[in-house]
Length: 459
Ligand code: TYD
Ligand code: MG
Image 1: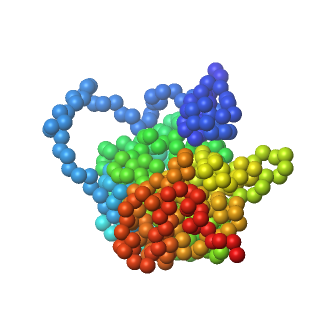
Image 2: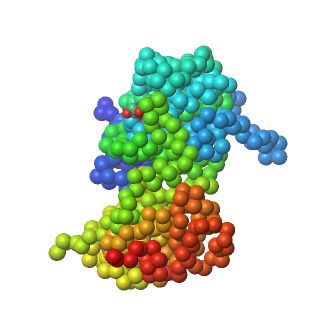
Image 3: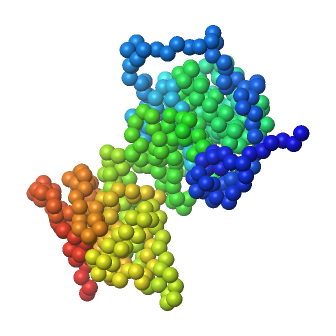
């Protein structure tokens, strides 16, 4: 009998009867793969045991206890911050990221702290026990409470867990784990879903905290963490520019906290170091006196972070269509700001190519970064630099007006702490300038005033 196959998107897990170049559900290109259709409720799978004794009774909510969830620190303040104040006992955390970004390093490093008060089982399908030992030595992780095993079979891993009774399990990675009862290969959609489901039951059933590493890959040959996002408690993405040593950890989903905090790390010779002062890192290497750059201040969770916005505006080659790209900044928002610059600022940017880039791998999705983007674009267009000690904070409206933003004093103080002396802000807000000492507040009403206040006059 011919085996039945189905087509899946490796980005979002969408199922379809025939192949397509682009997934109709998530819109990703070249992510559709053909895989054998799994029979539902596969026999021999221990992941879905039948409920014993027939139907289970539901429980009145009044009879349930409402203890706060139990949290514990991971020893990495930046990770704890992203998790919402430590890891929650019995939760499943998915850590996604591109290969080589530092996921295994981060997970092995937190074992140091975790092993002080719990037993940790590190299951690796990527490296041998010997390789893990070498890596642990490099990271100075050394504890009899850290158990490592090189394993790829789901069943054998569950047996090891039963035997060793750890408090924390780390699975590296979900794409190497497989259930032999399924026909599809490790890394396929059905395998990663099945294995994650089994790990989820382990977390909920036995109160074991599970960290699962998942590779994000652009080729779409293996199923990425996106497919699993809806199943797990927390999804963290570890990101960073391959060419720099800085890494940013952010939460895409968190059942036990907010998703707006970021953690910043630097990859060093002996593992990841926490960067407690991300503004300083994001601003290091900023060019002096070059047109086309302006510093913004955005809130990442409760923390104000300064980031450099760079813009390049050049006349489009005659006959060509203007090119626009943005990196780390919403494309449509950038297009809107360009249109406002044209109509309200009087700059003929429609005849220009425009490129916008946020330094350091940060993603600025807060309207408070609008003004810095506008100033950077105008600075490049007019070829006039912004003074190095100036930040611009404010949302830009469609009529070119500046709108105030939340937490303005907090942002100004962060800029002041890092040595900035001038701050362009929306004029609507009554701020007591004396509260900011030697920081000069340049209150402006619209982008025209902002550009005049922020750009150096031509010599
Ligand atoms: P790794 O944690 O193996 O990445 P992932 O698990 O996400 O694939 O990190 C791999 C990179 O980090 C590798 O290029 C080497 C580098 N690295 C350091 O620079 N310092 C270190 O202490 C360690 C362990 C790795
Ligand atoms: Mg790894």
